[in-house]
Length: 142
Image (cartoon, rainbow, N blue to C red):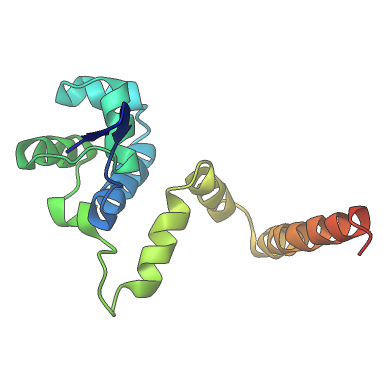
């Protein structure tokens, strides 16, 4: 619901479960190799609506959720994977990371390289934040 406050429109932030389902839809869509436009066409909505679902900004009705799960060829409970429980707390953070742009592509590419190259990539990626922090300190006189 939106409330009008002196000309400004206030909106409620998305609920964590809506964000989680949206992240899982994004992960499933990327794994299926579908664009937001393609997924939207399969379920009868615009790509903008898919964007809103993936951000958790709009809630998804049961029938639409079923359509999306069918297109992604996953059971509906998969879209709720990572829901807050003590057992899933670690998995939830992994789901959040995989929902970030390029993360899934990076993981899929990483899976295709040999062990020595994997170790080199990990060392390279781990060194980037340290180098950025050092450069920031040097610029700020620290």
